[in-house]
Amino acid sequence: MLPLIQLYSILEEERSRILERFTKVAKKHFNFKEVKGTWSSELIFRHILMSNYWLLRNLPGGEELTPPAIALNPGQESGNDVSIDHLRDSFLLVSDIIKQRLSYLQSAEEEEIIETFRGKKPRQTVILGFIYHELRHLGQITWLFKRSTGWSDKEIYSN
Image (cartoon, rainbow, N blue to C red; front, side):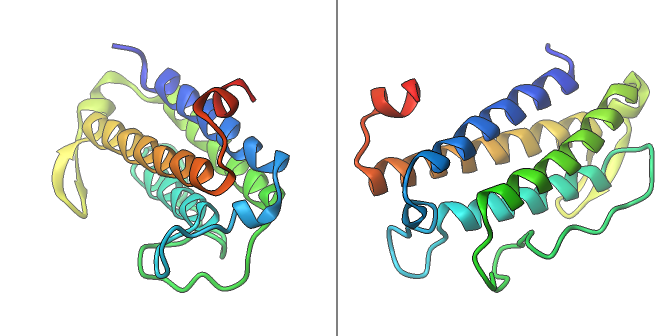
């Protein structure tokens, strides 16, 4: 298995690539909702940001950080639109801390049973579940981007 820090770095690269796509199109695509009452790509990214802070709380090695106001939990009101640059900067901040903590994570800490909102689980299972959670959301964002812009898979993945 790949080290957890390497898996997180791959996830971070994919997130950055997808976020960067939105700089090549009109802002309306970042805020596009397929159906009224669902989340736009912007809101999904804001939820992903919140989940990164959740992951951080489950890693040993430092004080707990308060998520920025732009980070969203499901069901939370979104407030004003957030720029791609603001999101990118917010992700860089939390990602650097996560990577630092993952780099110090020992095998015993990976296997340690921790309490989560879904019950007690080994920390490595929690981290892998987080990675899977974010990848699913990145897939949703790519789908929304495709629906909103009309781009083909070839156009999406070559840009």
